[in-house]
Amino acid sequence: MKKLVIAIAIGVAAIAVNAASVNWTASNIFQPGSTTDKIAAGSGLVYYFCAQETALADVSSALASTETTLAEKVSFLNGGSMDHAALDVAGKITHSTTWDKAAGSYTFYALIFENTSVTEGGKYVLTAVTSTYGWDNSSDTGVALGNQKTLTQNAASWSTVAASVPEPTSGVLMLLGLAGLALKRKRA
Image 1: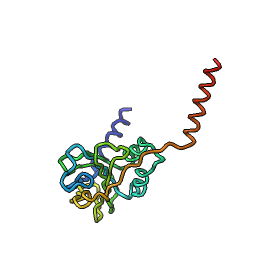
Image 2: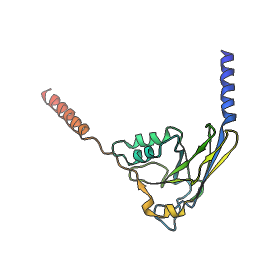
Image 3: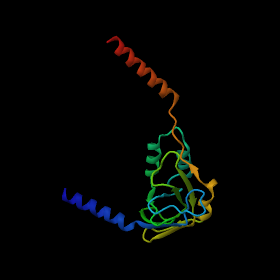
Image 4: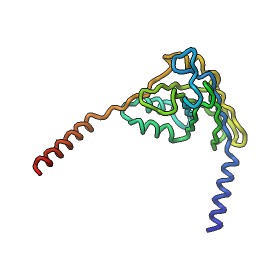
């Protein structure tokens, strides 16, 4: 048993040593459509991911879907190889995360939310680096998303997290259940 624990510890240490650190930066993140007010420190939330791991279309459709609940949307964003952090300075994010990926090129994206929780009706904007980066799992990679002023000041760039709408069949089944309970209570 002791040998097994030591072997696991060595394996974990080897993975940690080979993992690259990805340093994300973005600046001038303004409140939706505002030309003067930046999102306050600790108020905005940014999810980071690369398209090879999480399909961009999947993220967009999950947030725009009225068929998934808000909890499912948040679960989707928290799942997979995404990381997230709140803005650390007004209008700016600097965040470091560790990923263990094979060498190669990746296109990195950031999903910026106007507040620290994914809420129905909340605003978000999607941004990406204009080039791809690669690393060999032994060095740091900087992902500079750059100045987000033009994107975030444009109100049309922001989308709204769709509110989930219950299926009609769920409503009908709920009404039938309540009617059955009412009849049962009336007979008793």
